[in-house]
Image (cartoon, rainbow, N blue to C red; front, side, top):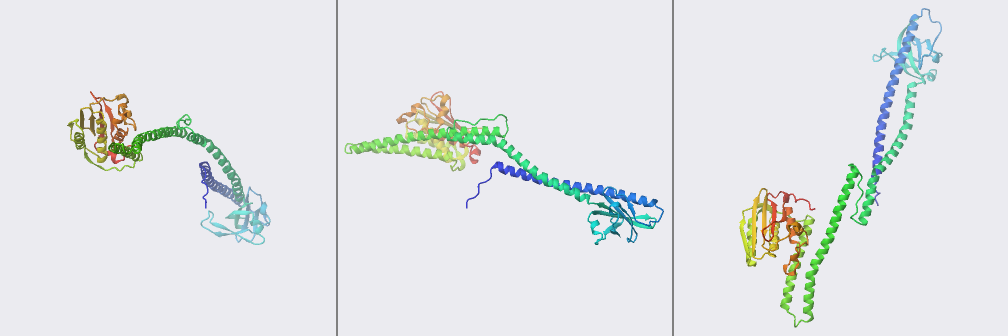
Length: 471
């Protein structure tokens, strides 16, 4: 079954805010109703007490026996009824209940301020009166006929009426407030998210057309402005990565095409006239170009794994001086060049031995292409770093543009001849390995020839943490 599409951020935020406002209004309504109820009860109690006090004062001044029921004046929402002690005869009553029978009797209740609690007399004669009375209080009263009882009631239930009116008002106003709040929140969120939607549409257009375009940056330093700058920075990185990928594919295709073309031309020429072909030369060409292809593919694969951060790293203690002595022995066995190792000092680092050996090998192989008579190797410890230098006595490089030689598929002009070999990836791998070991690779000034300086951290801290992120 297909799952329903999730709600938009605008809808979700509106719902959350409206629910929050509804909860706040509910608690506010309950608190307001309780406050009004307490105020009405206090007001009614004070009014009842005042009326009872007035009734007692009036009967205290009476001296003649009560021969017929007295009618008292109504005071606000309070009515009173005065009965004899036995509760069998009404002596006086407010005008609103002047004809009512005995409505209540008194019982002893220490919890009440007067010590008496009201017990309503419910029958067919009193029910009509009791329906409109509430909050009864009782007290003893002195009458010309002796001690009697005075009862005070709220008439027409003013507290319930006031509370009902309040609840009705809240019931009508709160939904209207929720609807109004929801509409305002919806519009406010729409205005707040409009720049984000504008950025989204702009990025969608840019992704479909040209990565060199950018989204407009809104002034200020709020979240939207920072989002615009972040999106532009991301687009710049994407543009750079796209351009780099295109250049990489183009250069890799060119480098692969060259040995493949040589292989095809050589084998086709030999196949066209097999009897006169120099098969030994063909074999030598196939082996040479095959090795060139193998080296190129291996280096491309290494760089691809490095870009994806999938290289396995095994930090161990590595003696860089031993690596340089091994390279010196290899060069002496391969060539007639002189190799100077007098500046090789014992230097130990924490690093991946395979990578560091690859690092030294690539720099030495690069220097061999230009060395005329002598190759100079050196290593020393300098603070937290180990410094390796490889110098040749060739034609040298232009230091102003030498950084480009560590980019992929970049070679010095003199290296582009076929007899020089090289793919323009060796120094790029050197720079990547040095970076992974917390160091750097660069050409430095030299009296003659070219000198490459390699720096790696001795403690292997960056290697253990995976190294800095690839730019």
